[in-house]
Image 1 (cartoon, rainbow, N blue to C red):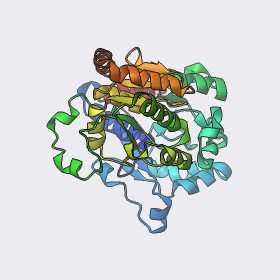
Image 2: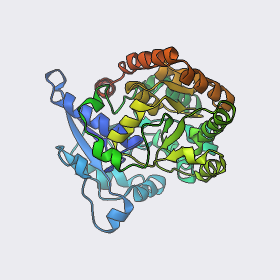
Image 3: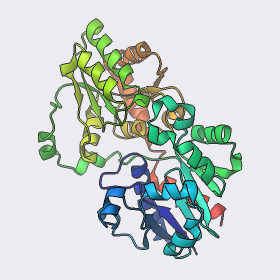
Image 4: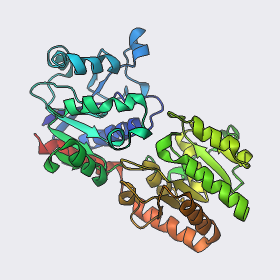
Length: 389
């Protein structure tokens, strides 16, 4: 029997991005913990409050985590612990390590892991966008590099989420390949997700007419996602081919999103471009399932989870031919150069004009998506844990 503690600080009441990965990983690990064939480990969760809650004395775990056993509250916010990492790393073994009740492994899930003593330390690194493409990240993320390199001094194993990210870690951080293990992600949905839901009431609360055909993008609204290329392709298709489709962008505003909304405002078809911000998992799934085509011409991805979600729910996919994305899609999507919006426009026209091509992409996408599951991710992660015990 060994004990692993996973840092669940990235999870909030509406998890997305890293938080979504950690939430699903913990849920799947918990199921393995109670499965007969995986009865050799005990799972614990560590959580740090946000700065605002810490200042108010609110240190509780988020409600969506409180049903788990072995919960460990680290009583300082991330901003403060980052300062300790930078200037007083010796504080962690002496003052915070006793809170964890002697685990064998601590899994840092957001580009850091603390220098606890006599504990094997694992760190998940999702991508190296802040090193490879600093122009696509904000000032907070740019600070990751120095801290990440410092944490590598005491990290025993790294988990990457794609072979592409693993190669970046090896090449840019000079980490030996045997020290990096890949555990692919999975969709938050399964193919039958929508079949048991009644979304009529929720649909009434969104400002969109689902009877109109639409092109879809789902992710954070920020420069790396290359949304301006989508808008340029949309404008071209509207002008040249007078397509009847709307364009739907679903996602929270990230950083430097202003030029994207300027491009929308300057479009002659701005009334047919809809930004719907954050939606429930159920509504996002509904939009995936009814989209004429899903567009994801991102400049760089550690994995590209929205692509997998779209394939899971039956949306034909057009996406980038770079970084990790071809690993996810296999031959189940049309891959384009993200720097050429005309390639994107031509691919869109192909899919919406050819019902057989569209259906072939849907069928291939569902088959491809079946290869990924959180159960597999958790099993591979558990295998990584066992490799360093």
